[in-house]
Amino acid sequence: MNAAKSSTGIGTIATADAERYRGRFAPSPTGPLHFGSLTAALGSYLEARRRRGTWSLRIENVDRTREVPGAADLIIRTLASFGFQWDGPIIYQSDRTEHYAAALDRLSRRGLVYPCSCSRSEIELAARGSASFADEVRYAGTCRSGPLHPNRPLASRFRTSPGRIALIDGLQGEVTQDVHLEVGDFVIRRRDGYFAYQLAVVVDDADFGTTQVVRGADLLDNTPRQILLQQALGFRFPTYAHLPLAVDPTGAKLSKSAQSVAIDPARGGLLLWQALAFLKQSPPASLSKAPALDVWAWALEQWDLSRLLGLKSLPAPPP
Ligand code: GLU
View 1: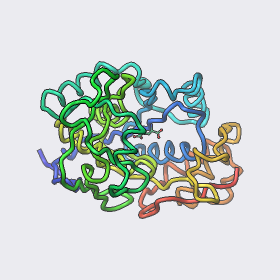
View 2: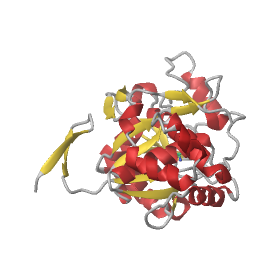
View 3: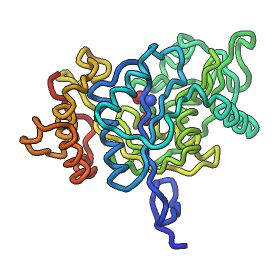
């Protein structure tokens, strides 16, 4: 079989020519869909459709403590009324606990996991005085050789080793991080028993055969951790394209600002037009008043991800 080479930056892997593109959108049900999540949904969807691939919808409710009742259904209804069409059944992380447990077990058997009793304030205290990277507090490795307080509820941490992880992001270019140095050993199962996003996302993308992850640039920093887990579990590496983040006029991430009000699909055509304009696709002005179906037809024809090369954040339109 002919093989096309695709570089992940962590070695060159061979992928079969005929392999089908599989994309996905993976919202967390912590609130209604907002403009930022609409752009992530639209970017991942159009890229999948342009590449004649599949696009699945995964509700990332692994963190049940942050789930807002009704939010998952509201997101699904909003996507449907905009006209998004997902392939296959909707995946719920809450149904997939056994798969995360199996992955944790595999990592444990390889000696890559240890129990940790540290509380957040203890972690912050231990990190004081050491180098700090972005807004991440590095875990100092306090429980590496055994939990300091074994009678407390214990988290499971992934044991990292020094060394840089490098990836070539389809939009952001080369990204490198020494996870051990900048993040430290990270939690894959929390003290309250819930699996962490980092593990769940890697297991899900592997199980459902995601070939490319298209998502917001706010998750770029998480990617090297996810690559470490993919390596340790022997999973294939998807490629990545991190879309610019929608920010408000102060530069704050939209979903964290007052502007992130729920979007109203009754204004479907205009909102899709605005999302396409945000994603630098330059939709014609005449389409801004057109029905959503016409905007879709234009977008499916004209979508070009490369127009977003190098853009890390962009201002969202006023609500
Ligand atoms: N659930 C994450 C979010 O809503 C997205 C995770 C991902 O796409 O990998 O921000």
